[in-house]
Structures are given as structure tokens and as C-alpha cells.
Image (tube, rainbow, N blue to C red; front, side, top):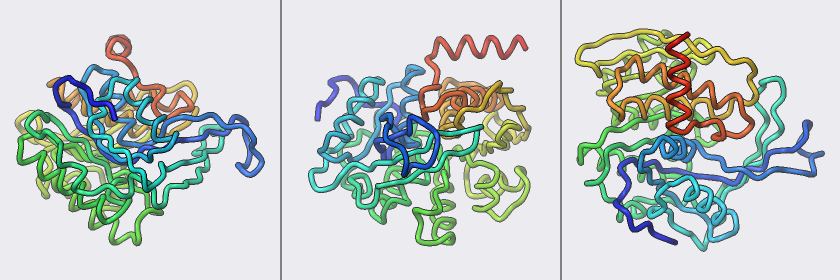
Length: 327
């Protein structure tokens, strides 16, 4: 594993990346012969998005010492991501997934081959070399704690350490019910982790399922009561809802979504949203600007086939934001 000689990352994400094979023609996977290889994984999508915007981002994980592990590491370093916390695991394989070609904006069917993967064997021990002094921000998702008991302990540990060292923490619940033993375990684990974050980023239906509340106002209230300082809820095409006390006093508002000519593939929209919100808040923007940038980058993500191909560079983002403010 090559270690970058530069300073340690100021932003850290962690979890599982998989090699993704996207069908190159429509129809059921059983009939598909050709696939295109891409990179998949919620937390590494966010890492790539923040890296493209100029942040020094590290990603902590395990990959198999197989060709797919090498592919993942090469793809991330090509995006400028610091790879010092990526561990090669000779005992376990890199996870794979196969995805139908999306049609008419519907969510494509996906088949996973990830059980027993290298990343599912992540443990607290994998964080022992992390330089928390250098850390400004930690981004966590609800997928990593679903991978295994030890990956769940790692999630707790990283969030505790980040907070102890004064870094801000964002948390995207990213519900994957099929990875959890039960809905109750999922709910209690993710709500506990959300309570360790500063900025909580659920989708509206995720928030309803996790908190038992109906309205964006009450879902946000649930997490604010647990200690979050901001809750930014994704409302899909309707945009996003903010409630929190980031700018000194509590406020709440809705920011309308960005109109999109054609929805190609909705996978990755939530990760794009997270990139927008986190980057804006780290830039020192207001809550309203952060919600607006989340909508803007989320809208970029759904106009392309891949999960992270639509994530903009800083230059492109500035052009998009200029265009948006002139509307």
C-alpha cells in the first residue's frame, strides 16, 4: 500500500467500496453478457465529491488483495483521495455488485456479492493509525455499521474520537434494511449513531421510519433533541428541508429542488446531496446556502448512469451556482 507523504487528511470517510458491474444493455441480469465496471459505495462517493471540490480527503477501509481491491484503490487515488488508511486484506475478497441498466428513471435492480467481504471485517483496530489531530470533519453512513458487529464498533469509535478531537461529524443514515438482522436493530443502532453527529442527513422516508415522526419538522426535532446541531432532510424532487441552530439561532425552512430535464439513474443522488451540504458548511456557508448546494449537486448526480460521475469540480460548481443565482 502506497502512503502519501503529504499531511494527514482533514476530512475522513469510511466504509465499503465495491466493484460495480453495470449491464450495458437493458433487461434482466440473467440475460446480460456485457457489463461496464465502475466504482460503488456511498461513503467513497462522498469522498470523491469532496476531493473534487479541493478538500484533502482520506477514506478508511479494507479491500481484498485481489484485482478488484487494486482497482478500487487506483480509482480513489486517481481522484486525489489519500489512501493511507486503506488496508489490504489477504483473507477476504472485495465485494462486488451487478446492476441492471436503469430505464425511465426507475431504480435499477441490483444483486450484491458482498457477504464476508474484506470491508465487513473492519474493526476498531483499523483506526489505530488515524491522525485525529489533523481531522476537521468525519462523514459516517448507516451502511458501515450494518456490515458487521466489528464494523459497527468501528463506527462508534471513529465518531467518538472525532468528537473528542473537535472535528465536526455528518451522518447519512443510508438505510439498507436487507443488511440488518431486523428493523428494530437498524433503528436503534442508527439513531444512537445519529446522536453522535452534528449534521444529520436523512431522506424523508428514512427519517419517518427511524424516528416514528411524520413531518420534517418533527423528524428534525427528534435528532436536535439528541444533540445534533442541524438536520437537513432530503425531500426528493421537492428539494430539502433544514431545521437547526447552525447560524446562531434555531430556524427551519424548505429549499426547492432543482428542475432536471431527464432523470437517468437516481442512485447517488443522496451522496451528491451530502457532498453539497458538507462542502458548503466546511466552506463556512449559511445553512440555506448549504441546503441549496445539496440540492444542486444531488441534481447533477441523477443525470448520469454512474453513482459519482456527475459530481462537479470546484470550477464547475462555481459555474452552476452562478447560473442558479441568476435564475
